[in-house]
Length: 243
Image 1 (spheres, helix red, strand yellow):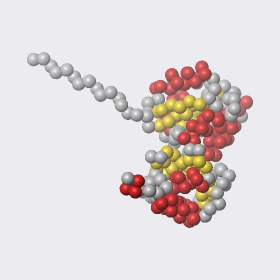
Image 2 (tube, helix red, strand yellow):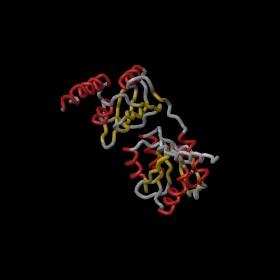
Image 3 (cartoon, helix red, strand yellow):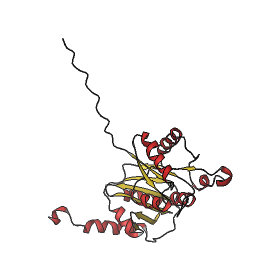
Image 4 (tube, helix red, strand yellow):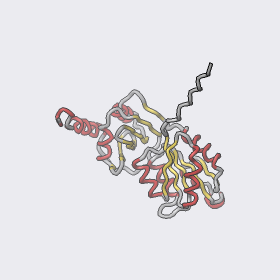
């Protein structure tokens, strides 16, 4: 009696769940990263050639880990790290550099990087460091409470922090000092326009870190800010009204 053939294993169809942003200006090294980091299962890999391009990507993409060179044109790695730790403090940063410690003097760590690795990279070590960095949790993951309620609680506690707010619309950032929203960013919007956009999202996911390093661009009291956002939602046309 002939045996039935063994069923073939199903193809692995999991889509990437995390995003890695690599910032490197040397094309040969870019190619090395593209090929060598293919073994990072579960990661989508984005590339930027210098700091300004990296910041543009960070404005529109939720990035889980950033790997950056130091010596680059337009905006070098030192300035990029300072900007990212100020604007996106939830993103862990790994530095890949050919500079010796006597040259960089561990300045990237002082600016907020979590690890410095020496070029040329040992890809297995780099991938291990990327996986470890991706497991770093932000200070808080908020579940079971709406954004407005959370903001009111933070206001009562006069908390200073940065909120990362994610919804189907994308990712936005709210910056609080002493319980008041002092700045917001969403894609190309900043300040009040960004805040109103974020505050009208339905049931977003929220993470926060206990730091706020931006200069205030708003001085509207939280109660007035939330009231205005509620009015925007109330005046938006419904699907039935649009039909």
